[in-house]
Image 1 (tube, helix red, strand yellow):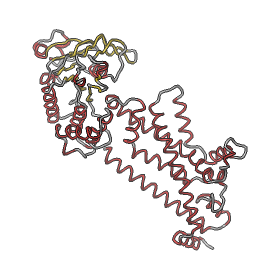
Image 2 (image 1 turned 120 degrees about the horizontal axis):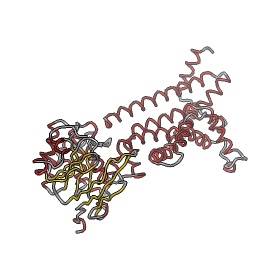
Image 3 (image 1 turned 30 degrees about the vertical axis):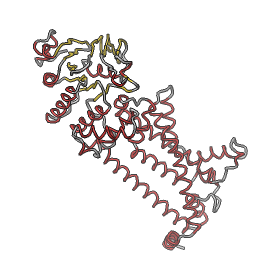
Image 4 (image 1 turned 90 degrees about the horizontal axis):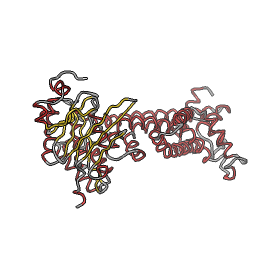
Length: 233
Length: 242
C-alpha cells in the first residue's frame, strides 16, 4: 500500500466512524481533559498563591516549577510507574495500567505549566491592581479570586498550553497505561504501535485527528486572546 | 445609629517613612477635622503621595502615628476612607462591574450593591457607559469611574493622589466640579497636587510639603496671599525648589 492509498484509507477511517477508532480518540480526550481539569483545579490557586506569597526559598520554588515545565514525559511516566507499581507506595490501589494512572501521569505534566504561567500572570496583574485592592481591603489571599477572574483570558491560554502538551505526549501514557487495546490505548500510543506494525492508515488517521486537535486548540487560544483584548484594552 | 460615628478628626503625628535608607517622609504632623478640601502641595518627591498612602493605610510608617477618631478609620467594620489614584486602577471588567466589585469587597448584600452601583453611575454621568469595559474608556471617564467607585463606598474621607495630572483641561474641569460637589455635601477631601492653579481653585487649606517635611500648614487664602517660608514662596512663583 503506497502513501496515497494509506491517506485514502485514513480518511475513510475518520469519516467512517469505526468504533475502535472512535474509542481510541475518546479515551485520549477523556484522559487528557481529566488531567487538564485536575491540573487547573490545583494549579490556578497554587500559582496565584505562589505569586502573592513571600517566603524564604520562593525563588528556588519558582525556578523548580519553571524547570518542571520541561519535565520529559517518559520521566513523569517513570515516576508515576514507581508510585503505582506493586511494590510502590500506592501499589495496593492496583491503578497501574489503568486510565486513572494515565490521568495521574498527565496531570503531573500539565500542573507545572499551569502553576508557572498562572504565577507569572497573577504577579503582573497584582502589580497593577495591588494598591486599589488593598484600598478596598483585599490584601493577601483575598486578592486571589479577583486576580484569577481578571486574568481569565490569559489563563485560558495557560490551560490550553497544558492541554496541547498532554494530548501530544506519548511517553507517560505508554509507561503507566501499557497501551492495552480497547482499554488504555490512546491516539499517540496507537500511532507509535501501528507505525511499527506497518498499519499506516490507522496511524495516519489518528495523526490527522491529533493535528486537527492542535489546530482547534490554537484557534480557541487565539479567540480567547481576542475576546480578552476587548475587555482588557 | 453607630454608622454615623465619625472617624474624624484624623491626627497625624511625627510621621516618618523611609525606603532604601532614605527618609522620604520626615516628621510630618497635622490634624484633619471634618469637612473641607485640604490640598497637599509641593514639588515631585516632596512626600505628598507617600503621606496620602500612609494615612490611607497602604503603607506602614517607620515611626509616628496616624490616629483616627475610630480605630484605623473603621466604624462598625466599615472602612470610612477611600482613595483615588493618579493612574486609575481599572479592573478588566465593565464600568458597573468595577463598582460592584468594590462593594462586594465591602461585604454588601447583592441588592445593596446593585442599587449603589446604579446610583453612582448615574451621579457621575456614567450610566450610558455602564456596560463598557472600563479599560477601554477615556482617561477622564476612567478617573470619573474611579471617583464613582470610591463614592459608592460612602467614605467620610476621600484621599486623591493627583487625580487630574494625566487628564486634559476639559476632563480636569469635570473632575474638579465633582470634587467641589462632594465637598459641598460634607465629604472631607484630601488631595495631592503639584498644580498650583488647581490648588488655588479648590483648596480650603494647604499643606505645603518640601523634601518630606511639612513646610507650611495654612488656610488657602493665607497661603496664597503670602507664604511664610521661602521654599513655598519660590514654589508659588514657579521657581524650582530643591
